[in-house]
Structure formats: C-alpha cells, structure tokens
Image (cartoon, rainbow, N blue to C red):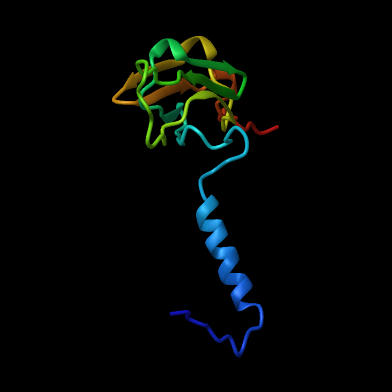
Length: 143
C-alpha cells in the first residue's frame, strides 16, 4: 500500500524531510581529516594548564606532544587493525590514520617542565605556567 503525505501549509516540507534524512545518513562521515579528534578538555589555573585528550587504543610510541611558547600540539597515528588472511570485516567503525591538533594555551608554558601521562586511553598533559608570564603585583610609591 502506497502512503501519500499531504503538506498543505508548507510546499517544501517534503524536501526538508528528504534533507533531514540525507543528513542523518551522512552524519559522521567526514570527507577529510577531522579537526575535532581527539576530544580534549583544557583547564587552567594561575599556575598551570591541564589538558586531557581521549586516545583509546593508541600505543605510547604513536603519540607525540610539542609545546612552544603558548602553543600545544598533539599528533599521532592509529595503525589499521591487521586481520588474518581470509577474514572479512562486516562493520568497521574504529578509524585509523593520522591526526594533528594544535591549541593556543591561555599563557606561555615552561616547555621543559611539561609532563604527560597516559592511562586508560586518556592522555593527561600538565603544562606549568612560565614564570615571566605570571602577573606581578606592582608596589605604588608616593613622590
């Protein structure tokens, strides 16, 4: 049985419905490298910046971190999963390949004192604030 919808008030309602359906179908399919992988959180205090990044399934050797002035770059590569001969993949949602994300930190960091740990798929970076970038209290004198 064929169902016919009536759109009396909006002549473009059928096209909008088709567009919503197409958007739903293509949601999550990027045409190039994603700018938002890995997901990160960045916090700061007066003394340091704390960055966490979700990187499940990465080996430590596949992740690189660089800090210069107030820029932090995280890059890495997830190797494709190797399967034995004759095995066919029926659903492949875990991506592989290279990523690179750079962030402007709220202030300059002491690059030689940055520490990074990786646990349970979460990369944690602690970047202490550079001493010369900390605010200084200026004493006022009377003339």
